Image 1 (cartoon, one colour):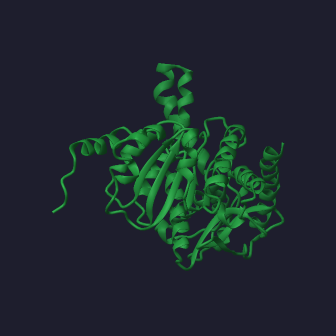
Image 2 (cartoon, rainbow, N blue to C red):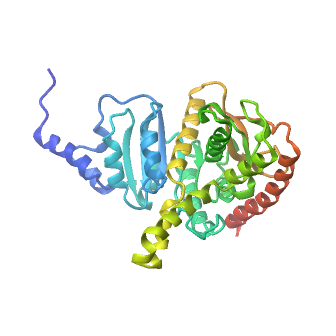
Image 3 (cartoon, one colour):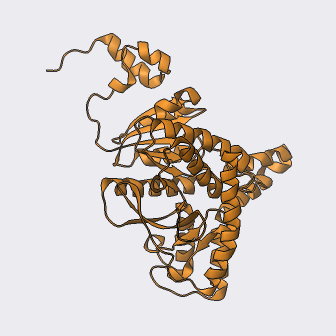
Length: 375
């Protein structure tokens, strides 16, 4: 028979979930949050999501909470984390969830983590290019990576914050400055490009998208996104018109979502509420599909960390596949992050021309990220 629990401790336990304490309050609470899970904790990896209260972060947190490989999930943001944490924590899956709010709690959120996922930043809004995101998101990424270098330098980092073509070089420079840089553990997430390619190709071929695999290389913006349609699995062929259509749609998938949202708001709100409502159309940027892709890539990283064999994904990483210092291509994942970079394979004439266009724009984006840290 278990000993009787003191009523004051029972009340404190309930309060600790309803009102997550600050670090100062935690020191004096009758029952610290770390003690609330004395039994039933599942073995697995410790994952932190930085930007967990945002449009990508919230659905991503839900999907990661569902992953049986995750034992501890830290949710960090500068706003709204307590509510998101309480909500996600009610899911009866194995991972224990803890929330962290604001810069003073960043180090606590990061300490001891195995995998860091960073969707933090502002979304792309109508009329905003990925370059427009740079000035805002570059500073956010730099601050977060400084925290990672200090608190969990051995963690694998999945970087989602746009523009990825520049933010991954920023993260690399921050880690270099801190003396903690390991290129095998820094990965820009381009999985959404692959998911879109698989979906759009499957539509054309009349197949289940889960049975289609399209390598997507280069970068994660516009013409830098290069789907290798000549290497589609299962093997197939396309007309020149289909190749042009599919390549354009895959490269502009994010714009497709933003524009769909803009049209909806124009139709339903502009006449009644005025042009200021257009600003809200940014809520239609790709968040749900990005969260799905990020969760899928995180799961691949975790399976690699567990020691599973044959985990191959496309990612934007420090690379020697081309003359550029960073490039998205197939990588094999393992316990230490990237275990092997796979070659591009044979390209047709259309893809070779696309590669040259991609490299030109990529070079500028990479240099922009490096210069941001060095200035």
